[in-house]
Image 1 (cartoon, rainbow, N blue to C red):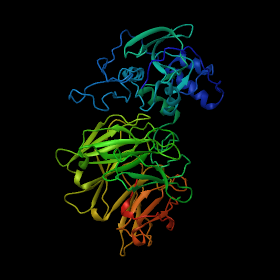
Image 2 (cartoon, rainbow, N blue to C red):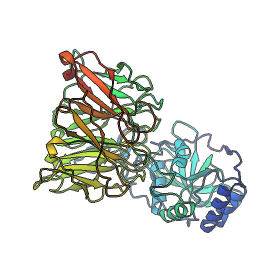
Image 3 (cartoon, one colour):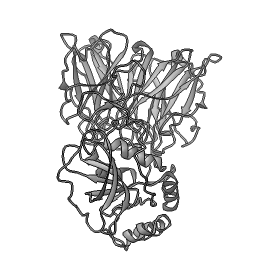
Image 4 (spheres, one colour):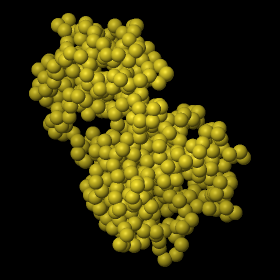
Length: 561
């Protein structure tokens, strides 16, 4: 959240001069002239650090902020709204629809920009981080203000942001803001000077800009790859999280580091058993904080054993930090399944819950990453009888290559023994209606699926593990075409070393080449574990290599997903 920083704000920090004689800069300047003559002048002066100038917005009197009645929680700079009407504060009720804290400067700035047609990115962080993170979403940042910008001050623990109503001839700005006084109130100030200004674009301007600059779409170099190998230490190689039973009710959380091989398990954390017991817990991994290192999300039953608790352990590079309770959703633990992905396209990994609906269907809920925390659950849609909760599996992935993870739904059809593969595209705010994309010719019970970028097309494919005449599996890949279809299933491997029914299969880019490999884990002699690496070549899997035999029994291990 963003607290008031009342001192040390009047500091300019000019950015280095920008080149203006390159073809890219000339094209950008020409495009920005269609948005704002003033913006074009700034480009010509070399002050625009990134494209993204917005047309002037008219100043307005009064705040109009819709959540000014939010009540204090008792914590510093924290206000909440009783969203479920139970009369008490529940975690997540202090987070606005843009994933910022009510009555904070960030919440007001996000709401004000959205009011003018800007799709505000989530995950910009505290106010002082906005000018650092905005360029990741293609927005310009510099020290030359325009009407409608967000002004950023970096001083203090949180920094401060404000909406620029107008710019004065001397370069100072007149701003509207929240929480400048530390009391969560709307104020306006004239003649301010900020450290930086973010030039947000409306959706219409963004579309126009992308079209003219050749950005967007599956073939664009600006596409964000949305298949995330788990990399706990940030070295570019995929790793594996292995949880083992401790002598008490707790668990040991170990990491096997990848580097063209798989290292021995190293203890990264042993959280208290009263918070994270081994029994009944589920570990998932993803870069929630956006620092390039995968963090650990653990779902545990609450004290009553009915509802789930969500714990976040941040990666420190060689260990996990202490667990923070970041969610206590009103879901039924035994009727909920979980997965992680970047569902809103903000480069941060979110948590998704798939829970039983009142009928046979499934409710889809997303807990968006806020950069260092998880936001409250957001209802993103539901499925009907064609994708029933009791006979479906959900896998996140970016089938279209547009930078947002949608969902593959593998469902058992009531009138067919075969699995029905549906695709639910993400809009960034919800999942669209399911589209039937494939009906593989195997029994639902005999086919296992895994999503990953196995070839070089920057889209998420499906790996299908199916029976062959002996005990080993066939590994077939359904390569995405970037739309609603797949190439015909192609046999990539038929490894005799793997026992299909005994093994579990995990995606793991152990050699860091950007292609998703497969790690097959199965019981070894005397009940211990053996780990086999099948390296992707982009068109097949190489012969399996045995890369690990962790000490212990497989029944006492649990691999993070």
